Image (cartoon, rainbow, N blue to C red; front, top):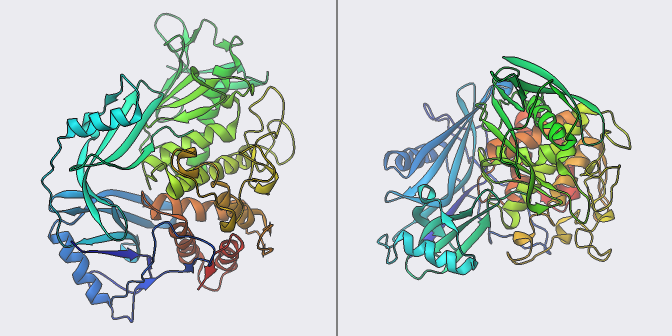
Length: 529
């Protein structure tokens, strides 16, 4: 068996599918790695095709059923359409095989993604899907795990740049707080890859006091029993929003719509509404799936403490523990978890290693942006700054908070010799068993690049200074790259290429926005071609 991996790095402005224009090439990779940095996907090969060759290649794959459109995304603010094609081999999905067309005004402008050229592989499994699930259940060592059988898939998994395996994708869950997905070899039962799906969010207006004792307006519903409940079924906002007391198992109610008995419920319900409004007003986005998906919020989840998570179906805010954290009270954390949901419906970055770190980074970036949208800039409770989680205690505190402005000032590992990284040379290469391969540890590299592009500043390691272009422009560049360009197994290099392509497409080659995006990538360690 032989294998060729075609990396559609970025294809620029040179072809039309209906009437292909001639061009020398349509492939471009903007960045290359410094010597000390190990690229997770191994050797990168630029892929050059003339316009007509590209047309023939892609049309052939579509006609043969090897590329199948599965998601259409519209960025109406930029007159852009984005069509995602999933790769198949002899009717089976190729895990991670995905390319994305980007069209402006109906005309293709660029393509990115990955296509795996598979010459031959046995597609008859030795194991059944049930056996694969049992093997993974035994591997996890947890009894009582249930399989989401509707999510099980048999497909082709690229193990490395040298081989493919026929494998099952299986997901095991326990209630709402535990969900793991694995790629299991369909012949040997070997666990090839795994990741968590828990991402550690008649009309009436009520008034309540939040976790910190401040008053907030609430979207509630007056029910026929005369009580007001913490849900809004498309009356105040155009989506169904339910806030549920996890330990008691019901939607809380109040007889006078004056919510003064549980500040955590008030904070969670109000801030999720703030986040919906932020995404709508800032990006023109309609909720988590851009189609006003029902949003379910669980508060007082006692399965974990001092934490919050998105589990693929709901936002969950846990009870305080030793650190006395109440994440439901903190806008950037609420937006962080909400953004994990958006990632699920867009790039779908898997929650492990570099894709998982990009997933976490995007959530931090949007959390900070939401703060600057809603709060005045400054220091203290309900002020916008570059820390994540500073409002989660009963008082303002930056202790153990990730710092987008200067990541090295914090250590998620709890030791000053192991600071949060701000540069590729500081990336932590850890096994999956430790922080899912560093999804939180390494999230600050791209979050810091966002800070540099938005605010301006100098990277501690490279000493390269970036002149900020403003948070609105920077957020739109990162949002577009993460939502419309990245794919499930995108790594750090893919993210750099996507950001540069977006900045180029939006502002042009000679623009300050594009030049500062280059500087931001250079500042965190990339060598820009």
